[in-house]
Length: 592
Image 1: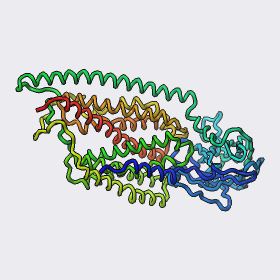
Image 2 (image 1 turned 180 degrees about the vertical axis):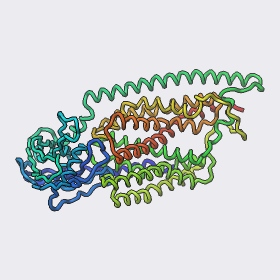
Image 3 (image 1 turned 90 degrees about the horizontal axis):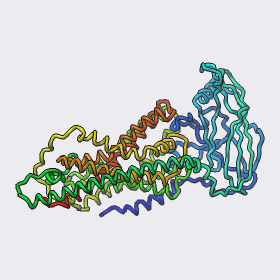
Image 4 (image 1 turned 60 degrees about the horizontal axis):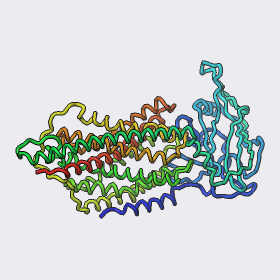
């Protein structure tokens, strides 16, 4: 019995929309003049290190009385958001001019703490009626000074808010730091600081429903769109040329093969067979390490389903800009609910391969992706705790994730495994397998696994290369990515190229009378993940300004998990395409 995939995804959608789609209630409020509009301070951190963020009041700002933490959804916590009530009072349509909210004598230690933050380009982030506010906390004056010891460090003490409203709704907010109102932090001495803010209100015709368009437009400016479409056209041309070339060559070669083998059957029976027909008795011989192979297929199928469902949600507009934590919530919930697919696929295929220990196979399936991810999380969370960063998950959140894994992921994995074991499906092999395997003839070095993987991974990677930069700049930077339709087209292109290149390499391998194509097709399909990880090295050193142990370990640690997921997913796509192809060609000939 096949697990009810559609039902699982439907339940996932319900859970996600009820618990994860975290548009705050505040964004639906209508206000009267003088009403309190919620303003939350979120985090501060070095601008070039997006993972290294700290609580707003970890810096020695004035802490108002009765600071309250905002209750956050799971995705917000995973995203590193830690919202607290901000010190400013921005009541609806209540203008203020240079109002002082705090006077404070900064001690030498506090001056030094602020100076280190200014030196590292610290920014702050707040949310006003769910609209994001960004700003730098200070500036470094370097003009005309070659020696860093002569640099001047200043803290901004006056923030100017400009808020646009339409009738009784907040539409837009901009924050500007007053460049003339500064506190000198250059010397290690006590300093008097008077923190002020100004609030100006302006009316606008922009409707409330379009207030997020401003942030979406930043990723779809005309010159950006031109680059995206150029990337897609380039990729499409690559795909058409590749698929056309491969289809023409393979069809012509296969046609000749079929004619040749048909003539051979009519000729003398003792005529020696050559090429891929020669190994028909070995081509469906089950691979070594069949439990690991089935587990890899199960995990890859689950990750493929997860990716497709994430694309579905993105295309219907769930992941709009600054929908805090929605993507993380979706990933956790959908991954948990699709574990039944992994269990069913792995167990069913393992039993088709005549495996006996299906329980061990199920355990391997459950830990194949989650295991490395868990170990990486443990290390990186320890690093975040040592840094006192907001990326460190609270104990309660870890318990929630553990409960999801225990009460949802594991039971569904087991249920899927049982359904797969009881499906009683047999492996569909169009030819019989001989008792003893033939010896594989010696092959040149370029037909070995690693050169074939390099060839198989390069073409799909070249099809997605340009789009990768924008995704990295969004995930590991401060750009916003909203062109999900283009990303989905690129993903489809990636799948097509992966499938075709794996099929082609599988044919050449069989034509060389090498019948061990199972693992090779999986490794060739998944090798794009290795190219993406190599791109990580290039991006880190050539295209980003990230630095420090915490940011480096977060970048390479989590990217290793993501690329490993790509390896499993695309490996599954490659093997499935190769399996369809191999079944087709051996079904088309007559074998004794």
